[in-house]
Length: 175
Image (cartoon, rainbow, N blue to C red; front, side, top):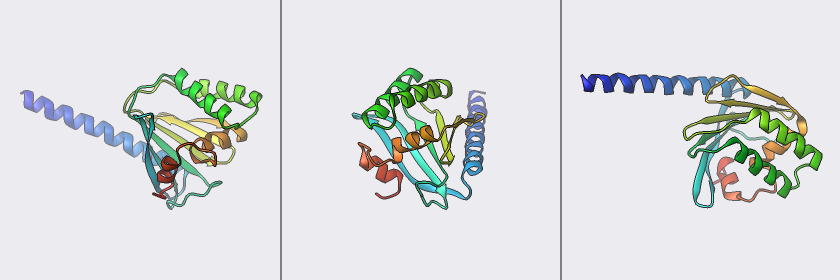
């Protein structure tokens, strides 16, 4: 009986995981026509892994102004406030906007971000240069229509002034 119960539980877990993967694939294709993987990289702070990132673009060819989707698979738990404050610090350090811009972006992130747990999958889509779309674990997407935020947020991973060039190169499929 125990073996049977474990088999049923395993099948249920695999079914849920499979349906989440299918939903995620459908969502990626909704925002990026002919989406294909560009590259993958693990983001770490110090030696601690935070998330595994996958970048998708049409036919796997990244273009700065083209549509793309970034999928972050979290390997650590993080509180929303920490994610927002770290992102704000990065915006400031990299001089990615005025203080007024960054104050507005903090508000946007506060509305669209949530705590993440190990295993959560966050999809960040950039269907055009004016829009950012967020979805957690295949949930209904939320949209931000703010061109300056969209460009700055995309540049966190794909911009010129990035600290971890190795991470970026792997994400872009260069290494």
